[in-house]
Length: 388
Ligand SMILES: Cc1ncc(COP(=O)(O)O)c(C=O)c1O
Image (cartoon, rainbow, N blue to C red; front, side):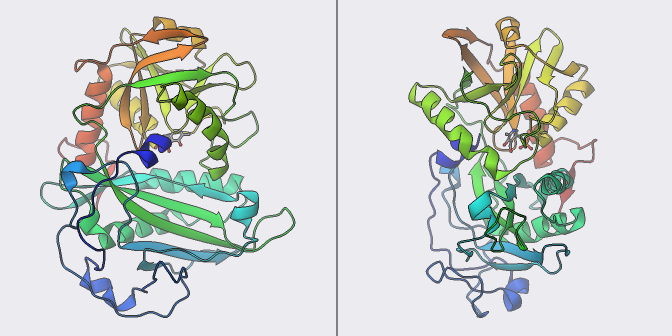
C-alpha cells in the first residue's frame, strides 16, 4: 500500500552515499548534486566503490524512501520516439513551472522489485508486465511511452547501477519506481510538447516480519477512487492524491487503509488505495473483475495463476459488498505488500473478521510467490528475469 509503503519506519543508512557500485559505468555517469537541482550539469568524474553492499542496517530496513546512487532518464518530444537514456547520479530534476505534469497531472508511475539470490545474482519479476501497463496507460494519458524493450533495458541498467542497495537475500528487495511525465511547458490544456521517462529505486524490507499486523480495512462509501470512463484502470498519478483524504480519515480512526466501492451503484467491491483484493470461501477464490475502474495488478495476475495451479477455482467477477460477511479469508495483493492478509473489514459500522493464521491460504500464496521472486522455488511460469 503506497501510504504504508512511503510512511513506514525508515531503515538506517550507515554511510555517506558517495560511491558507485560499478566502475564500468564511471565514464559516462553525470554527477548531479542535490543542491544544484539540475540534470543539465556538466559530467564530472566522481569517486566510486566496488562494495558489494551499501552500508545499511539491513535488519532494520523499513518501507520509507532510502535514496540510492543512480537514476535513469530518457526524454522525447511529442510525436517522437524515445532514443538514448542516461544513468546519472540520483538527485533533483529541473522542470518548467508550466510542465504538463505539474499543471494537468499528465503522468504515470510503475513499481516493481529486484531481489538478490543466494548465489548473488539479481532477479526482476515480470518487468514486461509493467512495461506493457505503462504503454497502455500512456495511450490513455496521450503520452509517448518507451517500448517494452527500452523499459526492460532501463530497469536492468538502474538495478545493476544500484546493485549495492539490493538487500541481502531474505532481508528485502530493491523497489524500482519508473515514472513517465509530460515534462514540457504547456499553458492551454493539451498534451505536453516533451516527455521524460525516469527511474529511481529504494531498498525496502519484506512485508512479512515478525509483528506485521493484518490489515484492518474500512469500506468508504463517501469517496470514489475511480469512475466509469475515467482512468482508474491505468496507473496515472491523478488516481492517488484524491484518495488521500479517505485514507487519512480512515487512519485517523485506526484503520490501515480504505476499500472502495464502485461509484455507480456503491454496491460492488473495487480495490484498496494501492492494492487489489481477494476473498476466499471454501476452495473458491474471488476477485473483482478488471473493468476499467480497477488497476490490473501484476501481483493480482500472478496470484490468480498460482492459485489455479494449486487447484483452486478463481473467479473474476462483480462482488457485492455483502459477500464480505461470508468470506473465510480476505487478502490484498500488490508489489509493495505482495500478499497481505486482511484481519477485518468495517462497513457501515459493522466489523467482520477473517482468518489470518499461519495456515491461511494467503500465507501459502505469499510463500509461493516470494519463493519464485527470490529464486528459491522453481519458476515454472517463466516470470523471473535474471540480470547478473
Ligand atoms: C490502485 C492500485 N491497485 C493495485 C495495485 C497492485 O498492482 P501491482 O500488483 O502491479 O503492484 C497497485 C499498485 O501499484 C495500485 O496502485
